[in-house]
Length: 103
Length: 486
Image 1 (cartoon, helix red, strand yellow):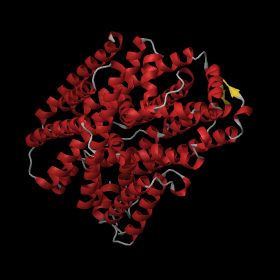
Image 2 (spheres, rainbow over the protein chains, first blue to last red):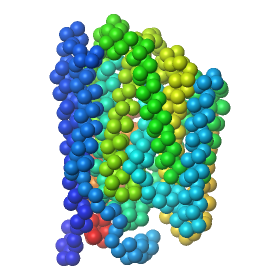
Image 3 (cartoon, chains in turn orange, red):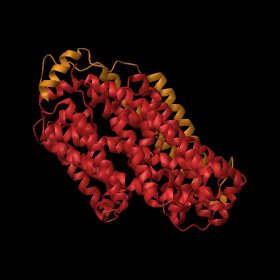
Image 4 (cartoon, rainbow over the protein chains, first blue to last red):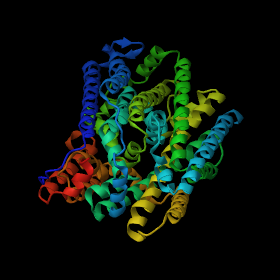
């Protein structure tokens, strides 16, 4: 990488990167939850299944509860960890100028 | 027939009103000389609810309402387990592309995904391969969606295939050319709401008709105990294969240009936050509800051989006519909301990425406006004509469209944002190796690594990207400065 003395990274990216990692972490948790309940409870023969609310237990936990829990988890994660920030560039005039040169 | 037609007619009136509303923005933008930005991206002004709905509705297509539930009918609860891998679609796309994508697209004034790739990689190859991939795959998907929609229309209303097709094509062309991206996004919201209502209605009625969930499960057990397992009938759904769907319809969705473009169209960070929440609740409910209805159908209407007929027959035979009309508007809305987004994005690709970059860079606003509308009309009519008499190559292309688009764009988009060392050579290597390997795996129906072939495809594309990037010079520091600097 070129060593540029006056290169300073956009400070908003730190938070943006953090949010991307939170999204991926929830995604991985989502897969684990889904996998553990589906195959942990559902691998036996169907005549031995237990039922919750009419559904086989594996299905109730890995699909229905999964949907509810992860929807609320996203709600919580967004409310607590995601931050409001301006998306515009500060000196718009300079940017516009650069853009015209590029195109 | 009348009760079925009334909700449909109301739906068309709703579309018309939204179009009129959007056209005022478009006319105002035309006077200000910002027509292109308004037409292709709605002036970056989507709020949270509209963003969530347009994201979900664009992604939710005929397969979620017809093909998927049909498979759930055949395979039972295992297919519902598979469908719920789509739950992350909204949150993972918005979290990963996130604010960075929105910030950069404002910095360089990008209106298309290709704009971002062009500024990031400075390579004509990336632009041209990417554009061709979008145009070919999009036309193939649009044609397939038109065909699905017109068949469904025929099955439910009894009118001819051609009439159904013509209504679709005219309605879509009308609101896209008059209202632009804003009309697309707003009509997606209406369509998303219709899909939600339709799903609630059919789910409740199916459960009532079946005498409750417990009864339905007992019925499924009596048909075939396999229907209650996560493995499908005779182990059709293997663990490795189903895991691949977390990639194909989960995280891989980030690679779909029609999805990622939405990550640059929202107004502010609050709308993104709200869209992540609303989008996740919505997409999960739609997938869970529709696929459950498919499995319940096995008890209510046993013995349907062709899975694609399950939902049309459920609509007609299980629902009372008034509910059939409401429900039936659901898949039609799903289809239209997919086609409209593809149509406007394919037009943007032709006009903005190819024409004004390569053929005539000196076009003024007036000309661009004229060409944008013209190209939208041409592409819309072309897809209509193709659907009347589907050419083999489009049917063939549609088979790999979903995975092919992901193979082309997934890594160039993500690594372009998060890896400073990513360069044009790596991007081109990734796009070509990904698309080619996906087509080969698909044609030979291989399941490499014991999973869905999208997994191996994306690994190959990633390896190609990293190896080629590291063995060629790093990108110019001006690019890094523009993308990462202040």
